[in-house]
Each structure stands twice: as C-alpha cells, then as structure tokens.
Length: 252
Image 1 (cartoon, rainbow, N blue to C red):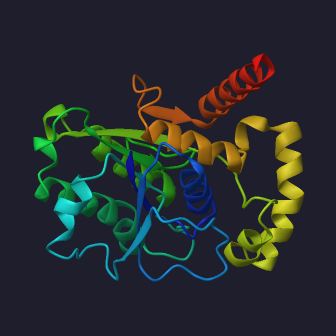
Image 2 (image 1 turned 90 degrees about the horizontal axis):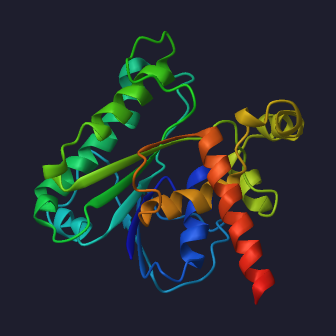
C-alpha cells in the first residue's frame, strides 16, 4: 500500500506517521509538508518515506498530481487551531487546502483508477457541524469540509472517511513530541486534563496511540461500510482490535 500523509508535525499527524512507518503492509509513504521535517522528530529510520515540500498547499507542481494518484490513500491531518484566526484564514487552512488536494487528485486522473477508489481519511474533531449552523468557527468550517468530502460522488474515484477525535495530547512515550508540539502552558494543562477526562468523561478523551492505529486501518479500507467515526465509535473499534490482537497472541 502507498500512503500520503499531511500534518505530520502535529500531535495527531506524528502519531499517524509513526504508526504507518512501522506497518509492514505500507510500502511507501509520501509526506506533504510546508517545510523539511524537523530534526526533533523521532520517527524510525526507513527507506519508504519521501518528503515533498509544498510551500503553498494551494499551488502544486505540475508533475505532482499524477504522482499522488499513484497512491492508495491519504490521511489528511493538516490543521491548526482556529483561535486567533479570522474566518478567512481558518477557511483557507481547513477547507481550501483540503479541497485543493482533491482537485489535484482529479487533475491526476483519479477517476480513471482501476480497482479500489482512492481513500481520503480526514482528521476532523468532535463538534464539527455539517449544517454550518453553529456559532463556533471550528465547528462550521470543519463541518463544511467534512460535507464536501462526503458529497464527492462515486464516479470521482474518491471515497472519504471522517474521524472526529475528542481531546488528545502528544504521546508520553515520545517526550520530543510534547516538548515541540505543545507550549509549556498546554503541557501543564494536558497533565491535569487528561487524567480527569479519562476518569470522568472518557467519551471526550482520545488515546493518541489508538488514533494513530485507527487512522491507518481506515486508510487501508477497514470498516469501509462506515464513513464517519465519532470519538466513542473510534475508541470502541480500537478496543476491539486490541482485544482481538491479545487473543491471537495467546493462541500462539
């Protein structure tokens, strides 16, 4: 399987990247990034990753669309907090960048693919509102993006899946993630909020390792009969995977 990743320097993206690198069924990973990957990323050394630097996600080199269509799926984890951004700025990063990628696939001839459709796994968030009636900027614009992806017709050659994680924070197993992705204030908040949410409101907490595994499995076509996974559903399916894996190990 050949996989495209975006947003790999974010908390969700780096965990997805790490999971994909360790997955032996994934033979090639193409990372679309606005800059070279930073040295602090402790991703296992591998020869299947290629980084393509896109300074502007609205402007792709002319030779790239065909190369993108040669992949099987994309996990789109590119995003940014809406705090401090105007509607126009947040729309550009959230909606325009995503749909520009879809346009590149179309220009690359994605509808002429033979076999399985190209799968887009979009990392959204709990609270996204596809009706766009919410007063919350994040909810409206994430919802608009979700709807645009899910409305793509079968003839497009693209099948979209939406993942809506709740509260998550970088893995404790990778200190460099926490130091470089979160501010000192956010790290302090993580330490307080995560244990409380796990105990009191588990439906509002997303284990980051589970999300990485889940996103990769969805990109591989697992649970293809579903196209929108809220946090509780994702956590339920991750637990089922982990239980099945433990049972297999016991049988060996």
